[in-house]
Amino acid sequence: MRRRRIYEGKGKVLFEGPEPGTVVQYFKDDATAFNNKKTGTITGKGVLNNRISEFIMSRLNDIGVPTHFMRRLNMREQLVREVEILPIEVVVRNVAAGSFAKRFGLEEGGRLPRSIIEYYYKSDELDDPLITEEHITAMGWAATQDLDEVMQMSLRVNDFLQGLFIGCGLTLVDFKLEFGRLWEDEEMRLVLADEISPDSCRLWDVESGERMDKDRFRRDMGGVEEAYQEVARRLGVLPEAGPLDLKGPKTVQ
Image (cartoon, rainbow, N blue to C red; front, side, top):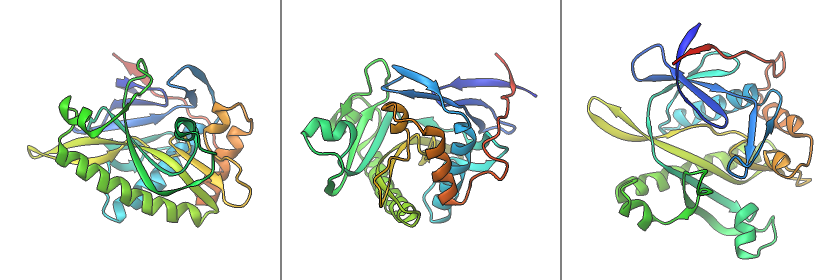
């Protein structure tokens, strides 16, 4: 079927939804790292991320965390509410790793005294710079009360995800969230948007410390597809037929 393409990002394509205020989110196999400086393909990633994100977003909806997710449509697509994305990436850190460990000269793997929330400005061209609440409010990207709500939701999501993943034998090291403004009946509320998957989370095996996320792609460690499949298997959402390919719909401009 032919659909109007609204936007194409690094890992997903957004198409016009079947009803006003809805969007179809198509998950690609494309992989990027270092703000699009490294690119590649992870076979079946789109199918697995679709299933994993569906599973997590559905359960967040169940516990009262508002999200844009409505339902999965097929192997690679899900129906979501149309939102106005805040130009901010929210990163929640539980364990020192990646750029955080490098920035402060810490050994990777050390648990932080408490969960730390950081904000980054969404811009590949500027390498997603670290920003403060003062930057966000001064530039008009979000109001102080919006950030209070974002922080509360982020910590609640962190509590839920840590429990979910530790039950699967995985440590939630850190993860990225995005939020959007949802307009309904001329009223605005903030909801969790984008996806939650091994693309946006650092997940380490509790016993071995083995990395089960996109770091395997970033660091040329190999076994990327297998790591994503293992996360899906532990969550109980690995597609019965495996990560089959599904061609995207034809688009019209």
